[in-house]
Amino acid sequence: MHDPRKKRRIITFSVTILLLIVVFFYGLTTGSVKVSYSEVWQTLTGGGNDMAIQLVWNLRLPRMLIAFLVGAALAIAGCLLQGVMRNPLADPGVIGVSAGGGLVAIILTIVLPSLSQFVPLGAFLGAFGTALLIYLVAWDKGVAPLRVILSGVAINAFIGAMTSGIMVLYSNRVQSIISWMTGTLSGKSWYHLNLILPYMLVGFVLSIFAIRSSNVLLLGDDAAKLLGYSVEKHRFFIIMLAAFLSGVAVSVAGLIGFVGLIVPHIFRLIIGNDYRFLLPMSAIGGALLVGFADTAARSWFGSIELPVGILLAMIGAPFFLFLLQRGRVAS
Image 1 (tube, rainbow, N blue to C red):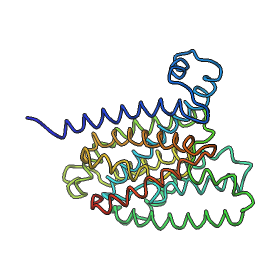
Image 2 (tube, rainbow, N blue to C red; image 1 turned 180 degrees about the horizontal axis):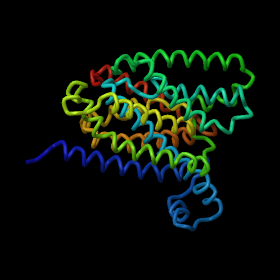
Image 3 (cartoon, rainbow, N blue to C red; image 1 turned 90 degrees about the vertical axis):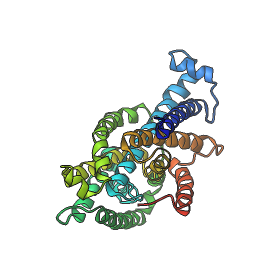
Image 4 (tube, rainbow, N blue to C red; image 1 turned 90 degrees about the horizontal axis):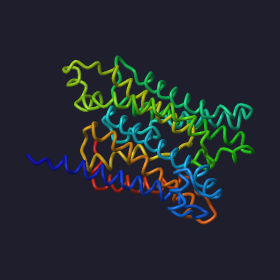
């Protein structure tokens, strides 16, 4: 029997992978100095001249790979949170997880500059600790998705106030953190890639084990319990996994928003809500979006390099409003 959903999934997967490859090579050739596709290929295969090696291998390739990893991590985090909360607004940026990482990073950068080398670790721990705090605040003989969302929004507002207060008190040092606050991949190198890669791989592997739980939790708590699932245990695991992934992403890229909010919606409309397909497709789509946005941000505005977080917000906010207006965002 012909299954139109299967065909749609195959087409969507094929097109997204093709676009990812196109963006990958486009990002390596594009910038203030153009590099031909043949020079890129020679460099990737062990040849190339000194200029191509410097531009492609040392500068653009690690930055593009980091963009892919960050995009995939944020999209997976948003996808998991939307499923476990059964709420389309459940995103690391909305419920305060990313802001928690940002707050710690700001403290280490402008309040305790002698500890600025610990910004990646601090941002990760801040995001993870914020997720744990949200979970504890929302706990009342169990954790209902709505309580987690409301607790997260309140804690996000509190963290935002603390962040603004610190930036006012240390206004003479704010310049050093502005680009990080808006989300940027500028200056990222093989060092940063090696720093986050092990954590990203652990998060991606663990997310595979969250697929079945996410599908069951979509049925509702009562149905999940009837199937023998420990709802609170699985919900806690998924929330902490999402915080882990977003914390690692924030630690290297700053406060990049809208990826975990928009990407899962796009693929949910196309291929449905089955996490066996939705989660990997969201990961690929997130990598595609951030990779393309970062290339555009550093090469489309002349000599000015726009932080990728600003460009993503300019793309993501109107698109989300469009979905909302069309009635395609439903809890």
